Image 1 (cartoon, rainbow, N blue to C red):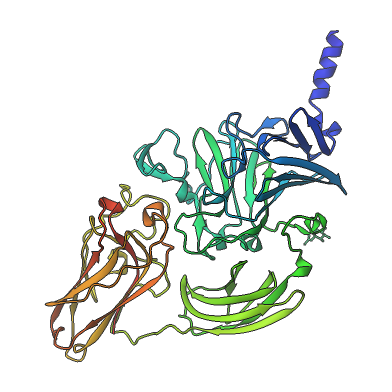
Image 2: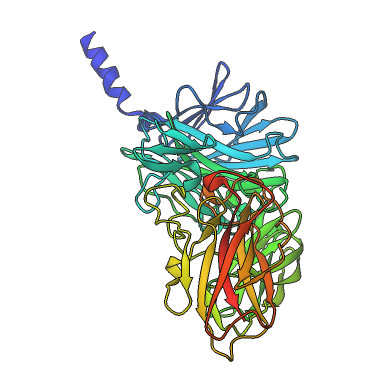
Amino acid sequence: MRFLRSSLAFLALLPRAFAAFGVTTSGSNLIVDSGAGLLTTINTANGDITSLTFNGKQLQDSSKFTQLSSGLGSASVTSSVANNVAKITITTSTITHYYIVQSGVNTLYIGTFASAEPTVGELRFIARLSKANVPNGVTINGEQVSEVNGGTAIEGTDVFLVNGQTRSKFYSSVPFIRDQVHGVTGSGVGVYIIVPSVSYESSSGGPFFRDINNQGTAQQELYWYMNSNHEQTETYRTGFFGPYAMAVTTGAAPSANLNTTFMDSLGLQGYVAASGRGTVTGTYSGTLAGTAVTIGFKNSAAQYWIAGSGGTFSRTLMKPGTYTVTLYQGELEAGTASVSVTAGRTSTVNIASSLSVPNAIWRIGTVDGTPAGFLNADKIETIHPSDTRMSNWGPITFTVGSSAATSFPMAQFKAVNNPTTIKWTATSAQIGARTLRIRTTEAFAGGRPQIIVNSFTSAAPAAPPAVDSRGVTRGTWRGLNQVYDFAIPAGTLTASSNTIQINTISGSAGDAFLSPNFVYDSVELF
Ligand SMILES: *[C@@H]1O[C@H](CO)[C@@H](O)[C@H](O)[C@H]1NC(C)=O
């Protein structure tokens, strides 16, 4: 008896030798065995992943499950196995969601077809993992910026103070153009979401949109947000989202090169194989030297992007259709064109910047659709503006010729650092009728600039388009870029010292950092 028991214990230590790839049914569960250590249990009543074990270690939280949105309620769940590939299909009236496992690979390949936007107004995949076994959340610059467990909410129910530092799930976000792999880890294990660049095609917001990747609560939450109103700048798309993946490793991040060719023959709803796609190549010109260039493509069905380099670009794997092409100087739309894509073919488009580039007397910041280089711009993406690690917001007085751009505020909040004052000593050749151009990247609660130059007060510009919902306090400057040109009449400027005051105005009110505000891109006088 003792011998038998110890033999069984010995056998239990050897699961790899006996693990068989495939799908088995147990009550209301489907259990998918990768044959290489990963066992995924799916509830057949609603499609929730209720267990995820890797070499015997439970990675799934036991009370809150892994699912689409906040769970589908009820769904039809079926499985099939062929050619060493297991396919689980989860369907509701508007969603067809797939989990696909290849024999010997510890990765869930995922695709989500949505014929309509979910009524909750966002589309996301959320893995709620075991905090005990995967305790380490997404780190940005070495900080667990989205670990909020035990914190005190200071804004909405999503920005927290933890040990004196601000944390939020929003701070785990990374612009889509740079977000191909993100994950969480524990001892001997890592769980990573992989989203190839092309797989953002049905999402919205373009290359610089960013969304939640992680939140540490009692669970370790790992996300892929396909779309949301977290500073929504574009209409949502429907169709096939992905393919994307959740890969389980012994800790290291997986490659971003997710080979999804094997999915071409799986009959996934809305999926378009590489053979049904085309390429666009072309040239671009006229952008500011030293500023990164991105070429974007969009229509109502799809969006793509590719970095430009040396005046040329090539974007592969696009679905057929006619696209608006956007030339981005940094994150600023600098020009547009149109191109039609045909499956199996290469189309060509040449695009030039049509930005007005004044011969400025002076310029503060870079015309690139971002506040980069300004005060607190280096911190805003991962901490709240109220965080004690922020530099003092002011109000700031900036002197042309002697102040550094790093002292000019990246954002101006009506109730915090209003106004910003610019001091400028002009020569007699520089006065007369002039234009002050203020570019902004984002606005909240109708915030926009109005100027007072010496004794001249400008008209109040109309409110910028409203963007749903909170902006810069959630760590993003990516809204709708605006340009405000203020004509300064002759006789206003003097050939000695001048004072230019920029005020945040709005018909709305709000407290502190939720008061009307806007984010600066650049200020030019010409
Ligand atoms: C991708 O996988 C397919 C098989 O599904 C294989 O033929 C192809 O060589 C792979 N591509 C790369 C780049 O590894």
